Image 1 (tube, rainbow, N blue to C red):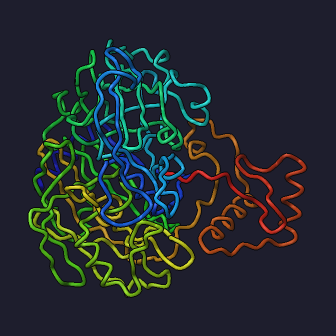
Image 2: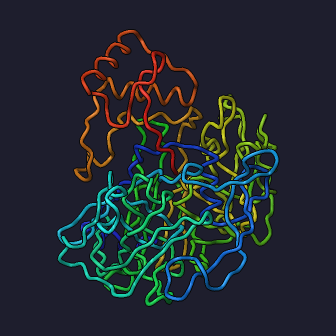
Image 3: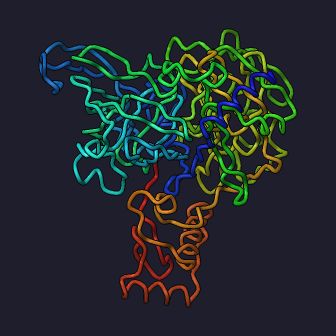
Length: 525
């Protein structure tokens, strides 16, 4: 193993590789049910627990040959995600407002020559690299950094190549393709396929980031050439085929930390090397398990769990590790056993998920472990509490996978480990990374509400938030979590003065005498 690390250190020094900071998204707001609906939509599974969201059978037309409109042509039955509107069973469409469409972390990536910096969502559960482009309507471009291929001397158009991502509610993102150089943490990937967005449904357009960088396997990439499937190489797969990267460095890693601790470590990715110091600090060797990439995911055996020290076998069970998912989804059998071990926990049909009291202390929660191959890893206590469901209950970080055939271990799991995604050797590795103090208070708002691009020198962030405005936003977020909002007379006066002088920050407005400022809602995953 020492030779393994030495080869990476040599490669890191030669290429000048650095960590890629996973920046907390300033606009991200946790919401349990919306996160769950996003997963129902994205993975297309049928919920097996009661609640307003479910799948309905529909008659669908494929459209005429050479047409991009689904009218005419062959028809067949399919299903789409719907929501129940009343007690009589009336259903309606699932909209962008029903689900989380934003990401918890965003990472800076450089595309083209000279480099154009964009903030992307790194997602190990998908394989497309798509960006907001100049082909989009101006209204959709607003608030994003737009990749302009005409300004890159190394961009090449890929004739007749298109892409389209579709979700279970019928929403989609699509466009055409080109190739260009992509730089991630100092590592240059040449001739990478870039999917240029020309159409984005609200579910895709409302996020804060400028696109997505898929880190799964090419099998699930959506690029087509001449209408036939022609999956593009993902950045890591392309990195491997370049031939100038040693076997030991054909990997990337991820380390996510709690945003509930203001002075905690920064979350990050590395490409081409492992942070050996972080491995050593765990006091354990890396636990490796072979992956099955046949479905395009980082999938491995996960045939047991442990709840409060009692092991439970889940014969033949598989799981995927997915940075694009915030929750952890497991079988109903495991969910039921876990929440039976939490005092006061219950299934809440209205929120379509398991909840437990906000008064719960970390020591009241059972130690919950999931298997990665033959090794069990703890999901730390604070990540069992995802977000307040209401003023009495937490929405649990572990929920039902419904009819899905495998577990989905998202950030609720990944925050408890340092993950090594070794694509060159087709294996997944991990060491424990448990926070020293388990914090069950709701995550506080970020101390500033300006665009997160402002401090990186990219994008359209213009407004610098002063301490008064930051204080008002913090107080508002406390109100959203606790229901307690109060303003002093001086604060109300300053708010009114700022309104009269046109000095309220973007996205805020005066509401009434009791609530001085209200931010415009951007609640996506």
